[in-house]
Structure formats: structure tokens, C-alpha cells
Image (cartoon, rainbow, N blue to C red; front, side, top):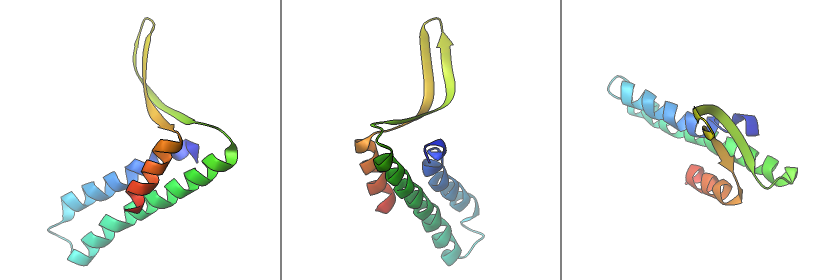
Length: 96
């Protein structure tokens, strides 16, 4: 699951973009459905990540997505870092 950490924020973002683009053309029921389902999928992915985190014995999950700036000794990367505190926060945000 740590290879798919980027999917946790991606699904709600895609649901948001879909609702912004099509909110006048679709029924209220469809818009509600497309607002809730991506967050539920993110919650399921968060639970799977938590399960893998606590069973792996690692203290931190780190996944680099891409290198942003490389100048001399300065290396700035974009990625996701999951530790126990951020994992609890992800579970709270996606569950609520």
C-alpha cells in the first residue's frame, strides 16, 4: 500500500473536480454520490495503509513522487511521509 499513498488525496480531489464541472448538469443524488464515494475509497485506502503500517514494524513510510529542485547539494523532493501521527490524522479526516 505504501506505493499507492498518492491515491488517498487523489480520489477526493477527483470527486471535487467532477462535482465542480458537472454540478448543474447532474441530479442532486448523483452529485451527492460522487461527493461521498471518493472519500469512502480514501478511507478504505487509509485503513489498508494503517494495517500495513502497524504490521510491518516500520516507524515511517516514505514514498518520493518526484524530484522538484536539484541544485548543488540542495535536493527538494515531493512525496508522502506517513508516521503514526499523520496516519491518525488521515484516518480522522477521511472518516469524518
